[in-house]
Length: 412
Image (cartoon, rainbow, N blue to C red; front, side):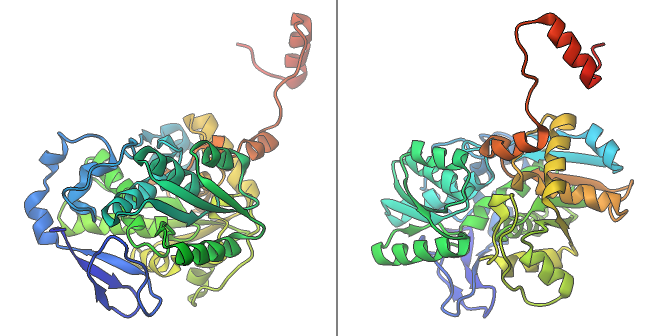
């Protein structure tokens, strides 16, 4: 890869050749892909981007793939960035945009990482890819791998929502529902991958996955005509996504495509916030229980904490925790003001933004992008539980009139 110099450990600084099947450093640290920015500057221009297909692969010069590696089959990336003026006015910010990444093929941002995993697995000559996941990484891998003709073994904790498990089964994955939490699920997947030599899609092991995830921030920058907001809010679980977002922004800054780096807002659930707790206490992270309905970010032992903490600190970011009730309220608010249906984990960034606005930390002169990382159809049970059941009536207009009057609904 002409655009990649090496992979470098974020802990000890040791460098490695950027081979397709990279895993962690010998010291246990996570690797980071290091680019040749001078080469990229010579080969990528904003003008060149205008004629390219609207997928994540439009940014190939900023991605760690061989020139001969084909784009993966599914249309991943270029999700809509909506101007959320009504919601911005309600929250009291100057300008707000919502990036709806639930519009990806398997309905989550994780498609970006899984498409990258499929590309690198093909470079490695692998036939089988495996991972552990609370749900979205699993379904995205199963879908992207199926489209590319690769087989998958997927490990999920038994609490994984049925909507996500249904996707897995439909995509033909070999699904192992582990009787335990995410940590136990991860450990079993690791043992199985070591035993059978499958290609490893686990986010904290495979350094290429955050490179796929970073394309969401590359898109945001391009969709905003390279004029960056003051803040970017995102949900945080294992830390891979926020780390990828920051990496993408730094890449753009290094090649001169943007002249400003936004501050990151790291939003976690009150019932599981080991990364934000480390920021608040200025201490190393420590495990926590996984006590939140936002299953996709219920990660008590974050595997990508080092990169996430670096991203938050380097950006002078803000860590905010929100309760399950605040998360579900944000889901409803996004729906009623923007027409965007996000799953609980997917709207946690917006819930965090709402809380910071109420506290006066984010103000009326600030501009913000909030990323919705997954679609609400992934977990309809909690949405119905929070929003309530529909009116259930016979085919009787008088009964309808009476019910509407009882509820005090406006009909004009």
